[in-house]
Length: 406
Image 1 (tube, one colour):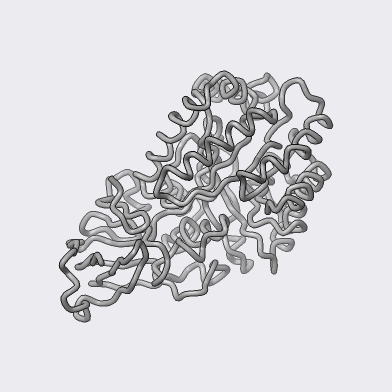
Image 2: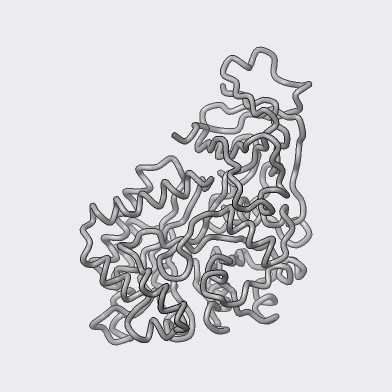
């Protein structure tokens, strides 16, 4: 057993059985000051106040020296398997071209598809695993990774194989999403491409946990999405939807109708979407890094919470619209630009994001029996300082499955 003692604040405590937080619950988190936490067999065994420390359990102890301990971040929306860079498009954005204009010129997702096609599977793995290590080093203990830059069956499967290889190589929890319907691949008509993705669904299901569709203006329609999600469900893949990034697309409605685990982006939503989400099992997931990088609206997180809904935050780490997987920065954007409190942002970046991957029974909070995916900060840090001093180094140790990350 390993004991972390002299913890200044143990934050994110939650009783067993709570899988997500909604409405007023988003403003609540358990906090214990001057605490200890015990780890055994990769899981949180127990915790308590220092005056009640387990006798004789400090043979393998770590002195937190007043540092904060909190759950590791969970990132439920990433596109980190990609090749090369799209920094040229960064200049296009500076010069005034919109995301849609860059895509219409053959850039954007299609550019990433061309680069990926020319990259060997081993090289694609090496480039991608470097991003995963970067994310873990910044405190992410669970992540979802999507395909979607292959845009033909062979290259989509290449991506899925790379994601599985990553999953088997790292101590972080990894969930896999088939996003063949990210854009229409070169050489296909729209209908031909949708059918090709429907046809490859059984193969994708050998690797993936979820199916996703970019249901938005200029990409895939509600009718396309309905068809693709039905094909995924027939193969055991639960939906996670891209919706309402570029326009009010109907993606939220079709996602909820199919029992989507999450509907993601939501930069452009109305009260209709809020009403549709009430009472559902679907987690609204917002991606403030994309809003920041593209200069588009931030999601209406406070209004969703005020309406009794939960909210998750994720990085959207990708080469074109959110080239960062730093969940501490995502948390800061949640506070600074979306006006969430630090506690609301913590719940959005841990428990609720874990829920959006189907992992909140395993990780995402300080709960005995859950994986010991933990962040130990330097001395003197508090939850409020985390998004406030958003560029100041804060991490001392990242624990994944109970082990310090090397």
